[in-house]
View 1 (cartoon, protein in one colour):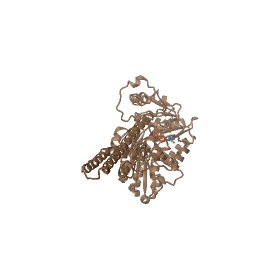
View 2 (view 1 turned 90 degrees about the horizontal axis):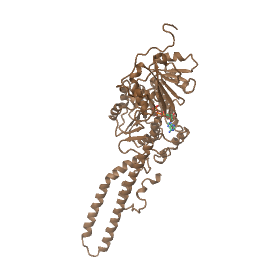
View 3 (view 1 turned 120 degrees about the vertical axis):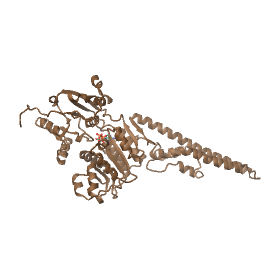
View 4 (view 1 turned 45 degrees about the vertical axis):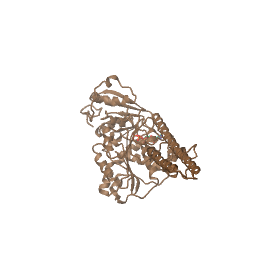
Length: 525
Ligand SMILES: Nc1ncnc2c1ncn2[C@@H]1O[C@H](COP(=O)(O)OP(=O)(O)OP(=O)(O)O)[C@@H](O)[C@H]1O
């Protein structure tokens, strides 16, 4: 494939490359990494100017023609035979050059059309200028972008046969040096959609400061992302660092060399302020779960990280399953000519999750069979845990009041199958990839549609099916419609009476809830 880089321009013609060296080099694709015949980053970037230049090329030849005509019209005795053959040759060359341009133009539009059909098939929606072609297969990482073999080997070892839709589009976007807003359903492979191009662009380990930063809203997600990075980098000596509490406490970061630094914004901000962390050489900044990072409480920390990443050629990108317009507007102020990639419908739940609403009347009705259960806050998570821990259910609990070690244990035990039910607050609602979760119970009604989408997204990942049960009480009824809209948009059945409830402008829905307890009121421990 790589061989076809520009040769389609000349197929079927005997173009005099020597004579038209200037024209040839102009249309010959600048050899970058991407050498596929499709509307690749380089090719697209080059193709458009080439098309724009077409007029210029024509004018240039028209000028030459005019000059030749003027010379030809000078009647010089004895030169007529030579003169006429020269002018005919020049005309032929002009014609060949024009044919080459036409061929390139045709090929360019053919590629655009092919890309559009392919995107439609995979539910990929893009906006922005010169959007690179989506990946048809992982093999294109090598044929189009000259990836090193270890990437393909590791992808194969992970058992990935095909790129997911977000990977198909976001990887070429980042590899072509463009910034990206990406919104794709939970569990759809967004992590590798940014890790893969970063590793490919960084090429090899270097001692030149910090080169890429990935920000995640929680420590658990940062730890998981670091693990995923290492899986894809296996076999290479990349220096991938998770900013842990110990690390941030101990080190002086002024000399830190690290290919990819993964952290919560708080820890990076702390390291910048107190530990002389220098981010001026960062080439990639990824904001994962970006809408969460732009929420009050985190946005200031994110802002100071963004400022510290002062390299003018930095590429910043945002990834999330929910990307509200307000976040996009805010982010656009710091991004340059970003490409927007949406998979399916923006802000929608994964279609592989069967979603149900269950009316439980009051708080008392809620203690049901649970799998992974989200409670509204840490107090309620503790209460719920206390209720189920003595039953035969092997339950774990995770919330912000636990120490880091306890939080890690809760996650690890759940991953290892030592606990079967994890009672959690929203602290693990985003990004966490527990492969075995087949059901999420919203024990407490989520406080926003985005929270709902992320919570239920802990099941039904990577194309597996999942189930989500949302318990609601009388107090939650006014907010049902917002969740019902998400359900209906992903093809789940919703009772008509819920769809006819008035739409509420949803702020935060946190009703006063009774304590979770089956003990009769007044009974002490
Ligand atoms: N190309 C692929 N083929 C098969 N599985 C994949 C592929 N890419 C990623 N996965 C797997 O899909 C699962 C979900 O991926 P990931 O955690 O990146 O999802 P996500 O889109 O970031 O979800 P969330 O929005 O919840 O953070 C992971 O277990 C990952 O290993």
